[in-house]
Picture 1 (tube, helix red, strand yellow):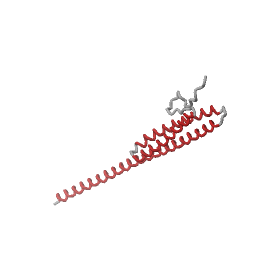
Picture 2 (cartoon, helix red, strand yellow):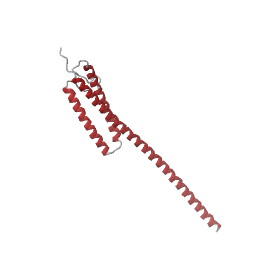
Picture 3 (cartoon, one colour):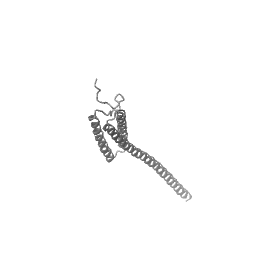
Picture 4 (cartoon, one colour):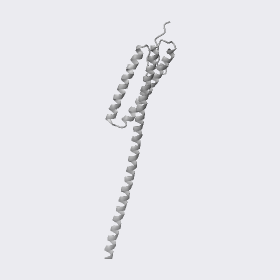
Length: 167
């Protein structure tokens, strides 16, 4: 009888030990899972903030392009010869800002593609398409006025190709 009680006691202690180990393992897995979710949440949050920041940057740069365009058009409408240098500088500023926006779009595309969200990718594509239409229109306007915008970022072409000077 003592032996049976002893065996039952050992089995109960063994089962309590298994239950205790299972509870500890469950809590450990829970803590690790929560930590991983927090890290993923922080990563996603950081990427979203970066995307918002890049969108704001592209918006600011587009506004700066428009500001330089307005200033350049105003300079061209006045027939003052001192505005030529200012006009060339405006064209260089416009080109620089357009290149900055294009670089921001590239970075933004990489970031948004990591989200794997088709709606966000389509929204960015629509936004970029509208911007490219704007830049094309802008380039045509400057081209009609005898200047070209260098959108390639090539330093050899400063973006202010005036009409060829007559010899």
